[in-house]
Image (cartoon, rainbow, N blue to C red):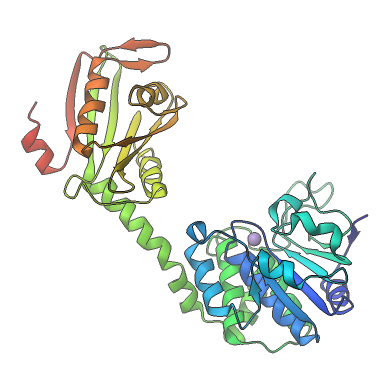
Length: 376
Ligand SMILES: [Mn+2]
């Protein structure tokens, strides 16, 4: 049976009364809210005389840069361990605190849930089928019964943990207030959504305690850098071509690649995001491509669905559906791949079930260099 905790006071009491050894875990694919709330909880547990460990078990390669930075800065200070550390340290007397999720399949310790003497869940997401059983839960519901307008009760796990630290009058490192502010900043999309009555009050108190709002903005600059790479690729490397199929159907297709430095290596995400970005514009379909290592080119294709990009990607050895598809090609220069795609489309593009060759094509927008080499 899950026991529902009604207030911050109840939650604080349950944590105070828990065992001397505590493990704290957030959700997989950790983010700033998940890890910041875990760090705050670790400090709270220590102030209550417990030994508390944070479990963060993610492959280095896919760990978010912000999470990696927080982990590296705090591994020793806040006992951040991975699953091998957990296996050495846990015993049947220990308590587990789950933060920022309530789902059993999203926690690193999913195979050990029966081994804890007690589980406490702190979350701001709705419960469901996979909600961890036999736990004490503090999950402020976002919607009252019979209430048509959902009221935001709490923005984030970080907001709850900030309330806990304030309630318990724990004096922390300023860094912790900064991280918690960052967790709220992330989950409210910079105070744009899910901001509840208490959220402003709590963030005000975090600032009064010394949260460095400037540092939080700095933490988020990593996103800006990634965005710039994508923007550069999109705005400097896109050719827009209009293909006329009949008097009424004129389809504009985007081809995006780094024409100036074709050998530039991108991460896969960046190419997919460039394709997604292009779909904000008035085009029918988009092909974004770039090297993901010296040998391999990745193509991400998107369409509104009228032009079947899945079929086009199959033609070059990839796959997907009519609206979203991809391919990886080896041993081919990037510009040759673009030419192959152009020929494939000139030969006839899949529109629904039919293959229809265009009657005419016009370059409607392109970098100067491209225009010089491809006069119509
Ligand atoms: Mn969250």
